[in-house]
Image 1 (tube, rainbow, N blue to C red):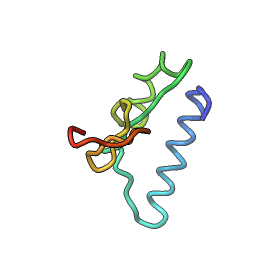
Image 2 (image 1 turned 180 degrees about the vertical axis):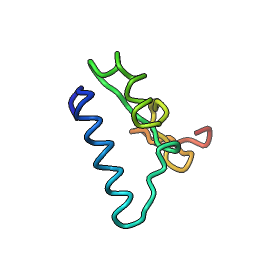
Image 3 (image 1 turned 120 degrees about the vertical axis):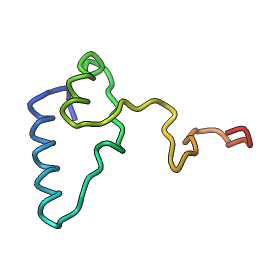
Length: 75
């Protein structure tokens, strides 16, 4: 998504509607938000809007870092 707070508000609204239709739940407090480019300056606004934490690279899946090279035992 482009760096636009209004589009982000619309996305949050759309995700809220998605939650209510099938009765599912989106765990925003367990999610991470990654901002790049100009959006990096407004990370605080996006985290307050979505209620997510700021993510860091490398991305972890089930506690294992997702990296492009071969995993070692130390990872």
